[in-house]
Length: 145
Image (cartoon, rainbow, N blue to C red; front, side, top):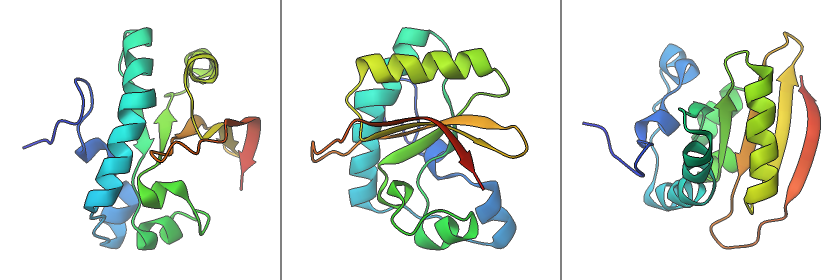
């Protein structure tokens, strides 16, 4: 049974990972990380979903340290604390840019990054700190290696 954390989001969509499945990694989330993730959802992701009127798909949410290492995440990644999510845009650059600009204009977040890789896949990375110490750090174009 899915664990509902807002009217549009369930916890499991933030913990699922093809990499974890393929490598036999148990991506178990703790209570503190769930608390942080709920803050991200309620302060950024649910308002985005409500404003856009369509699904916001999570590409990567919570990552345990082993999974974070397996995907090449930075050592201090906010994904490991439940404070970050990468939003899938499914190849729709205009949709992704709308999401990015809406979050930038309407949400207090820690980091907001328009990211892409060498293969041409784009996504929106957003993080939110539940302690209120959000930096409003925006990067408009970041190539992930």
